[in-house]
Image: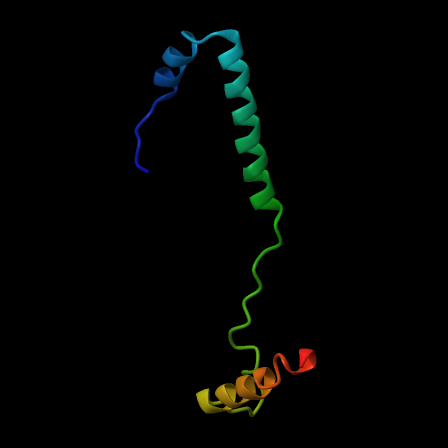
Length: 80
């Protein structure tokens, strides 16, 4: 969303609102600030690229496919 709104535009709109409407807007502002703070507090992403770089390991797409088949092949057998 690309909207060009200035603080002056916001102010002009706010001064025309009732106290009840201002209270709602204030609650919304607090909510937006809270959401932003939650995003900041989330733990950072740990990138695993190159994790095995120093080891002599060669994992192919076929190896991954086989491991997936083995992992998921017995799914549902516990309930039978």
